[in-house]
Length: 190
Image 1: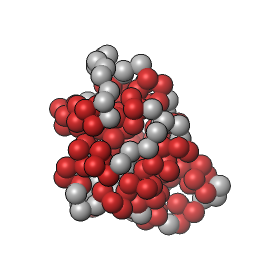
Image 2 (image 1 turned 90 degrees about the vertical axis):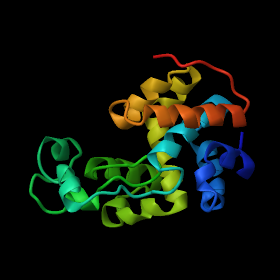
Image 3 (image 1 turned 60 degrees about the vertical axis):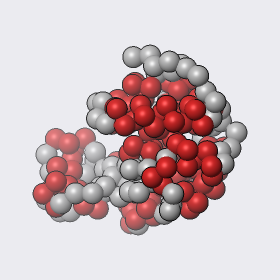
Image 4 (image 1 turned 45 degrees about the vertical axis):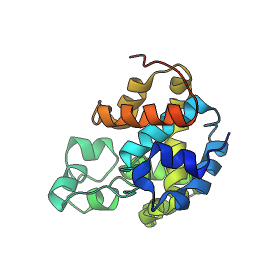
C-alpha cells in the first residue's frame, strides 16, 4: 500500500510546503520495512507527524545545555555516548522523523541502512528526507511497532518511541486524521 500526497496532507496539513519532499521516501520506506497496511501506515504517520512537527523538524531542537543530558550522565551512558563532556550530546542528538538519538542507536541504524558506520561520521545524513524516512521506518520495524499497530496498541507504540506519553493528545489527533484519510476504523488499546 502506498499513500498519495492528498492523503499525506489530510494527515499533516501543516506539512504543506514539505510533504512533496517526503512522499516518495515514505512510500519506499513503507515497502522496505513492511509498513504495508492501512493500520500500520496510519499509526506510523501519526507518530512521525508528532515527532517531526508535521515534517517540519528532522533534527532535535535544543540548546547546548538541553542537549548536555545526552553528553554526560546516566542517559548519555544508556545511549552509548562517551562519559566525557565531549559533544556527543550535540553530535548524536535526535534526527530523522522518529528522532534517532545517541551513538549506540546511530551505529545500529547506520549498520542497518548502509552496512557500515557512516552515520557516526555523518549524522546529518538523517536530516535528508530519504534517510529521515528510512531511519524512522527501521526504528519502527526493529521495535516491533508493526505488530503493535496490527493489535491497535497506539499508546504502547507511543511509549516505545517516546519513553512515555509525551504529546499523546497531538498524536491521537494525527492518528484520527490518518485513520480517516486511509479509511481505517479501530480503537485504542492501552
